Amino acid sequence: MNEKSTYIYDHRRYIIAGVVVVVLALLLFRLFSLQILSNDYKKWADSNAFQRRTLYPARGVIYDRKGNLLVYNQPSYDVMVIMREIKQLDTLDFCRTIGITKAFFDEQMEAIKDKNRNPGYSPYVSQIFMSQLSENEYGALLEKFYKFSGFYIRHRPLREFGCTNAAHILGSLGEVSRNDIEQDDYYVPGDNSGRSGIERSYEKILRGEKGVEILLRDTHGRIKGKYEDGKYDEEPVSGKNLTLSIDMDLQAYGEMILKNKPGSIVMIEPSTGEILCLVSWPSYDPNLLIGRERNTNFEMLRNDQLKPLFDRSIMGAYSPGSTFKPAQALIFLQEGVLTKEKTYACYGGYAYTGGRLGCHTHYSPASVVSAIGMSCNTFFCWGLHDLLDSRARYATIQEAFEGWRNYMVSMGFGHSLGVDLPGEYRYSTIPNSQYYDNAHNNRWSSGSIISTAIGQGEILATPLQICNLAATIANRGYYIVPHVVHSIQDMPLEEKYRTRKYTDVKQEYYDYIVEGMRAAVISLGGTCGKFYLPDIEICGKTGTIQNPHGRNHSACIAFAPMKNPQVAIAVYIENGGAGSQLAVPLARLMLHKFFRGEIPDYDKWLERDMLNWSTLPGTLNYIVRKQEEDTEVEHHVE
Image (tube, rainbow, N blue to C red; front, side, top):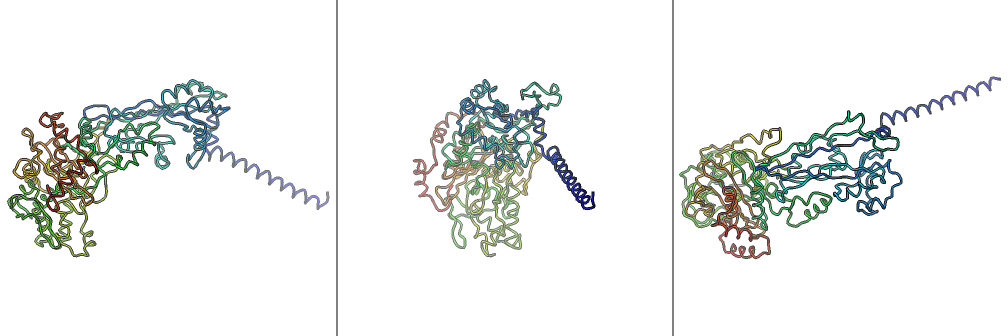
C-alpha cells in the first residue's frame, strides 16, 4: 500500500469513528432526555404496570350557629380518559350512552389535547373528559365500561346546599383556572376550588388533603388489584368543618322582608364581633351554582341588571348620612369642641359661605344628647366648624382635618374592616387633607366640606362598617373585627377575630351617645320613635341620605338592650326614602325576630306592609312615596 492510499484509509477511519461517536452521543442524550429530563417516558413505563388514582377528600361541611347543616357533600362522577389507551372506540355508542353529541365529543377531545388550553397535557396521564355525571348517566356508563377502553370514572364529592339562602356568605365552587394551578400544585385541571364566599376565604381549610391509590395492571391494561396490597397508598384527609356565626333563621327572614328593596341588613353580636345575619338583596339561590349548569346560571346572574352577585353588605360603598353623626359627636367631645351641656341654636339650617344646609323643624337650642335624638343638622355643622376653623387646637385646617380623620380610622372607617369574606370594599372612603388641598387649591374651610358633618359628600361606608359603628357604641368604645365563622374544627380563629380594637375616644363620651340614641327612640321629637318597644330598651339613629340620582336612601342603626347589648343592627335601603319610613320598620321586625323568634300580633300589619313594599323604580310604592318627598324641606329630612 502506497503512502497516498494509507493517508486516505486513515482519514476515512477517523470520519467513520467520528460519525459513530456522534450517533452514540445523540442516543445517550436522547436516553438521558427521556428518562431524566422528561416525565413522559416514565409515565408511559409506569402506565404499563400501574395506574395512580387520585382519592379526593371529603370537603369540610358547614353549619350555622344553631347546628343546622347548611353545606354538605354528595357523590359526584367525572369521566376521565387516558388518550394512549383508547382502542377501537365506538364513538357513537359512547356518545349515546352518556347523552352527548358527536360534535361535543370531538370538541372535548380537541380541548384536552390543546396544550394552550390544557397545559401539561400528556397522552399517558388521565385527563378529565366530562364532569359531574348524574346517577342515571353514571349507571348507564358503568354497564358498558368494558367496551370503552381508556375511559375511567373518578369519584369526588359535589357540594349540596341544605338551604336556599345566604348565597353571598356560603359562596360556590368552580373549576380551577390555569393561574390557580400555577400558584398551587395541589390543583390539577378539572379540580374545583372556592370561587366566592366562605368556600373561597376558607378554601385551604375546607378542601382537605388528597390521597392516592396505586393499582396494578396486566399486559392488556386490565386492573388486577392494588399494588403490594395498598402498601404505598395514601388515604385522603377530610377538610375541617366550619360553624358559622350566622343564624340561618334570622338570615332567611331578613332576605324575605328585604325582597324588592335593593339594600342590606347587617346584625352583629357586639361582644364577639360575630355576624348574625348579612343580608343583601337582590340575592340568588346558591343551588344555581352547582352541577353542570353552573356556568350557564352564572352568566345569567352576571347579566341580570339588578346585580344579584353583588353583595351590598360588604361591597356597596354608600354615604352613611345621619347614622354618621354619633361618630362626629364622639370626636367633638374628645377634642373638647363639645361638652355634654354645650348647645347650638338651629334656625332651620346652617348658613355658610356659598350656601345653606337645611334642617327640619325641632326645638332649639340643642345639646349633644338632644341633637342626636332629633338629628339636628345645624348642630353637627357648627361642631365641624369649631373643630376645623378654630386655631385654638390646631395650627392649620390640614392638621385639624388629619386629626379628625385619625379618629374615624380608629372607629373602622376609611379602610376595609377585614371580614372573613372575599370582596370587601377596600378603598379609602375617608379623604385626607391633601385631597381637599388639591380640590380647593389650598384654600378651603369647614364650609367647603360641610356635607361631611352629616355623613355625605365624599364620605362612604359599607353597611357592615355602619353596623360596626353601632356595635362599637354598644360596647362603649371598642369592636372586634366582624366575622362570619364562629369556630373551626380543631383550630382556633385568627387572632384579629378574638381581639378588642379600642377607638381613640374615651369611654365616658360613649355614654352621652348612648343617651342620645335612646332619646331618639323615647323623647318627643326623636327620629326613631318607631323603634319603641315597652319591654326592650332600643337605642337608635336614623339616616336619610340625599341621592342625586333619584329618591333618597333610607338608613338606620340600632342596638339593644341599652345595657349589656346583645345585638347591633344596620339597615340601608337604596331609594327607600326617609330613614324612619322604611329602614326603621325593617329593623324593628328584625329585632322582633332576634329577641322573640317571631313577630308579635300587634306588628303583623307592619310585617305585611314591608313584605308588599317595593322600592324598585316604576312600582306604585316608589311613585307614591317619591311624590310625597317632593314636598319635603330642603336638603335633608329625618
